[in-house]
Length: 412
Image (cartoon, rainbow, N blue to C red; front, side):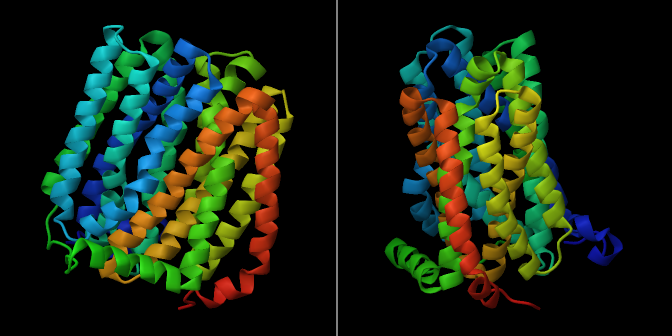
């Protein structure tokens, strides 16, 4: 259902002309802010209790690795279900997880193994939640022409939460406690549940056949299309290397810059600022070839900024480096999501989105675990510097494939 013609809206936000997407967008705004507050509070709690960079890596790994292991199968299952109903259920379960974490933290019953287990539970729920959210954006917009803009706006929302949430979490941690941050996140899920109850319109078509057939069909499509395969490979490379910065930020905040939770919030917020800038750019970018160009630039920027961040001990320069890292990673992740969802057929969207989230978050998990373990032996700065160099080498290889990538992207 559309409240007004998209042409009556500014081009950068034209997808908001669609009523269902506006409702989803509003509920998502609150939910995302709560999730970022919890993520910062959880990492700070783990490091406060243990002082272990390795355990930060393990916790981040457990929160993300289910999306690599469960995500592709979840995508096949999702394409056979009523997506809106299941998204509401996963939101309710994630709210219960946040409330349980808040209650047990407030009671001082939390231990490092418990926090790892809660991160793992959230990771399993997110394996279903993320592809459900992403695959519903197309039906909520109802226009293939406006889908790339809707995806960019959704990512802009995520990154504005990433910009606002961490500094807000740092302030809340100074004024209240980790338990209060977890409770706020629990309430934030109710906003999206409420918005989804107001969404109207036909249910997206469901895939037919057994789980095995549906899964093989999606995997076969991704493998047989060179452009899709290469875009997913790029996701793996960027998130295995550059995205691991998030695991080590508490180490930099306390041990390199001699700060506290507020310093951590500013570092995370700087990365969110850069990420928000990339989504503003992508929202204003018309044509898939130009989106591909932003992705290629993003690989280079994230690699160079990561090297700069790792090499400095001056906080203002580090904040600037985080802006660059956030911009580059988000340009890659969001741009590739826009390209994939625009290239694949509607009936395969849930499965391809699940492969996207598996590559995006699964390799983020592997990279975070690897970075945390290696940093405990060689130092956080050395590891981020090495990862920046590795990504730069990959970026040079990707540039040699630029012509073939452009041939695989529609120019209409």
